[in-house]
Amino acid sequence: MPGLIFLGTASAVAYPGHENSHLLFEGESQTILVDCVGNPVLRLGQVGREINEITDLIITHFHPDHVTGIPLLLMNMWLLGRTERLDIYGLGSALKRVEKMMGLFGWSAWDMEYAVEFHPLPEENLTLVLETPEFRIQSSPVNHLIPTIGLRIEFLEQNRLVAYSGDTEPCPQVVDLAAGADLLIHEAAGNYSGHTSPGQAGEIADQAGVKELFLIHYSFHEKDAAAHLAEAQKTFSGRVALAEDLTEINFE
Image (cartoon, rainbow, N blue to C red; front, side, top):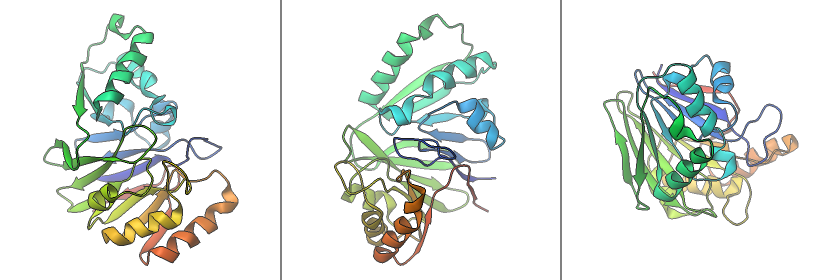
C-alpha cells in the first residue's frame, strides 16, 4: 500500500531500537529509499521488504550517518541477482563522494547485471528530482554543515503531500517545501549549528500550515521524549509525534 516507513529515526548516534535516520516511500510499483545506513537487507527484512524492491535512492547529504549503508546496498543488490537499473539522486558534490567511496571497494570490477545511474541535482529551490505517475518529488538546499537537501514528496494518486527537512537549522526553504503538506518530517536534534530544536520545528510546521509534524533525528536520551513533544506543541497547534523506527504510515 502506498505510504512511508521510518526505517531509522536517531540522530548521528544510533542506539538500541533506533537506527540512524532514513526512510522508505512506497507506491504501487515504485519504492524510494531516502538515505541509506546500516545493513539494508536486514533493516528492510524487518518490515517485510526486499532490497531489490527499491527503484530509486535519494541522498540528502554525505555525512556518515546518512550514507554508510550504500556499499552494502549496491553489493547485495548485485549478489541477489538484480537486473533492473537503480537511479540515485543527490547534489553533485554528494554523488561524486559516493562514486569515490565505491571506488575504494573496487566496484568497477564487480560483474553486476544492473546499471547504476547518477542524477546530480543543482542547489536550487524546488528542483524537480523525479516525476512519475505515482510521485512528484522536489528538492531544495537547506542550511546544514555541508550541502544538504530537503524534500517535497507528492503521492499523486493518493493526493497526499509529505515534506522531509533533511538535517538543517531553521530556514525558509523548508517552509516552502512543506507548504500545505499533510505531513512534515523535521529533524529535532537541538538548537545548535546546522540543526533544529523541537520548538523550532514546531514553528516551521506552523509557518508552513501543515497538518501533522513528526520529529525525527532527535536526541538519543529516551527521557527527553516527552520534553521534545511538549516543546514542539508550544509552537505548533497541530498533531505532533515522535517518529519511531519501523513505523509505517499508509495512505489509502
